[in-house]
Length: 182
Image (cartoon, rainbow, N blue to C red):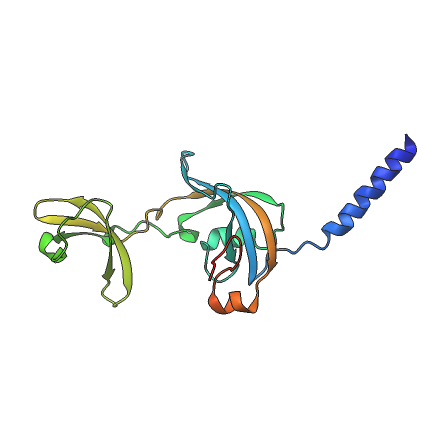
């Protein structure tokens, strides 16, 4: 039995040496994760299902709070991350909710709750607004992200970490099985 234990110890030691070659998440690495996003009540808001989400780390593809917590992790790591609104989709801003006259939407025959439109703010920046309420004379729109003001809870498993190719960095997205296909 002692020989068998010694053999297992040698195998474990060899496995640990191989694990040393695993790449950690760093700026501009391609990362594939499985995740489940819930709110503070435990309601599932989004999840990756069986296909991992792949992204280039450090270029703004993920919300800052999640990206910060993933930095330095490696394939096989599992973590739970709670992201405050300030590091997620920002605080809920009441000034982004407006009531507009129906005739603002000229040329749009049917307006329904949940529809999204592109709008320009006072600085000329384009933003997405959602219809929240439809009245006879007024339409209420909301320019907040649907998850603004919420603490976001992630269960994450890092599936793969690798170097991004020059082409991926140039295009700003991942190519291949879990990324974009040209």
